[in-house]
Image 1 (cartoon, rainbow, N blue to C red):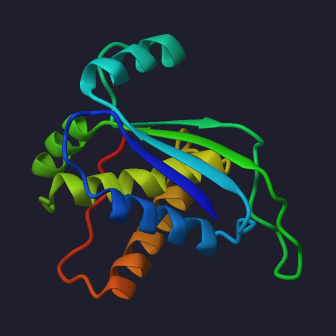
Image 2 (cartoon, helix red, strand yellow; image 1 turned 90 degrees about the vertical axis):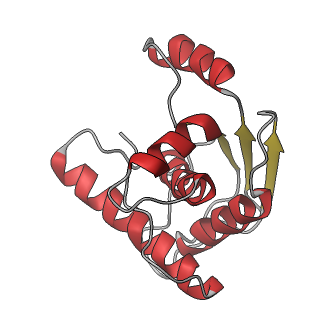
Length: 165
């Protein structure tokens, strides 16, 4: 798996954890091991510009996903996953810090960025949360991936509750 993490935000973030959880999520979703992903960490001003440009919505947001080859997880266990470019995930640590602090289960900015990374991966793979059934599926899968990764890393305490909108 080729995953690049580029921190342009000026904020210190746990880039290794972002890389690790992205790799874990892609492996769990059975994405081809030669597929490529880019994760970019930006400040609130840059995120706001992207949010206005691509979503026509004001203010910075937590995560945005820009799919490239529209890869999807294989539908059958014996199906060979296609190889390609997944796309870009853009994260904003300033929004992540605020959301982590305001969450029902308060958690750190880095924990929120890990959750948002998984959220972004799932969006790249075609998952969405516009409808209640889609939201239940996506957020359930997101929680299972984050919990699985945390367990594998031996991290204790409650997993971050979904705070993405």
